[in-house]
Length: 215
Picture (tube, rainbow, N blue to C red):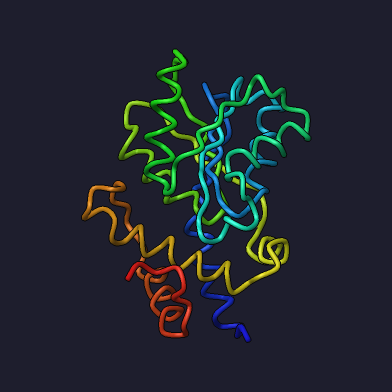
């Protein structure tokens, strides 16, 4: 049972994870693979709105997607985008990445091999991964502008759409932990985390939302 105080802490962390970047036309839209097919849908919408002339979907499988997307996250994302009207010829697939750093490094190499000039990336993730995706991209792809984006939904609506609120809170907590510890490993750039967000994170860890924490 999720308490209202836990839910309030989750909403606070959710809001912090959102970057609030203004959408603008970019060289390419990169959809980061995950369990959430909504990332593919949002990326497709951005393409159809003319915000990028090309899409890269990146991702293999993980323990949360191996049954849901057995052919790989990127392949399933491409299929969904094509269903929504994106020409298959405007989608590149990067099928090997298993973490966000690999997503960005492998995508960078894929675009270089395809002779695609990139000055700005529209980086599409789950809403609670916006900040970590941005921090990772600034670390591994510093020469391009990063516009971090996701579905325009709030915490409650998103949790209902996923159908597993505890999973969403576990993911929120795990994403924040990585923002706190990954700068020391040079995996992401450092970003200041307000004390109120740190306190919410610590309360949720004590409450048992630890399934996605690094051990």
